Image 1 (cartoon, rainbow, N blue to C red):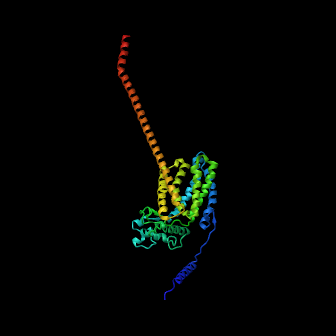
Image 2: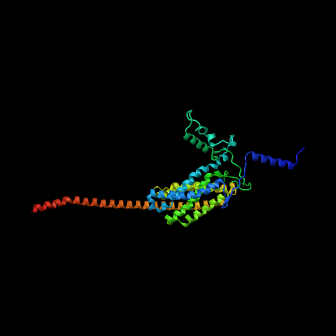
Image 3: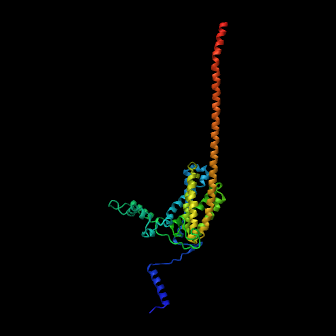
Length: 397
């Protein structure tokens, strides 16, 4: 006898309830502060802000003390706090970028399904099995004896590294926002270089990055008004810090700090070279700055905008935010390129003028030496005549 549909539905609900109870599933309702849910990750984000604010002064003044040249180099002094912020954000973002997925394996048919491998297969386990096996065993034993603390930790780090989703050969997750009526790379499910399928996500690393950024923005404003206000413009100082602080808080409210952290954190690699060049002008490198600026703030930013706009779905307006950021970075880079081209033309013109001047000086030197030699030849040819006249005068006498 078939059971009643209502009874079947009740049994299904009861089964789901039992499964949730057995797994200890709980639903915690967190309090909110300024619209921010006070979960453990957001609490770390909020606590990091005042700590990072204090750290700006702890880092700024000792640096000024040990690098006295910054007293006269006020422009370099204005980039000290930014230098430490860029180093902090970029370093931690390296821990976050491993959650991205590489799309090249799917496009080339090198994913685990196409190769007949288990879903847990990675780049290391398939193409570098010896390295993978060594990393998996590192720290478990060493020459038959108990491994040292250093080897254990090194093994843990290597195993964590090779297990990052960035190196996974598992097939990419389907794009939920894709539409078959749209072009493949324009909303039809096509991904560019990387996939953001694991974002947004809860991450302590992202909370630290974003909290430190807001603390830096507040501290840098105080330091600028105290020491280097003439080096900071309203657009690049007040408006920039206020705008990005509001954006970060907005991303926190929608649980998308990880997206801000991975894109903004990677973008700071070029800022490290920029700050270093201002702080120590003799070590300035426009080449490396331009390489990292283009790679991080233009290319990677564009890939991120594409993913957020078509493949990730709503994430607090992150796609629009980074689209504007991409336009600004492109404008700044084009301006930087024009300046470098102007400097190159100026150097070429100066070298040409210097070469022409050297050639003219050389020609003058040759002409003057030639005239001197010619006059010397006339004198030597007149010498016998003079001697004859002298002898004739002696005979007359």
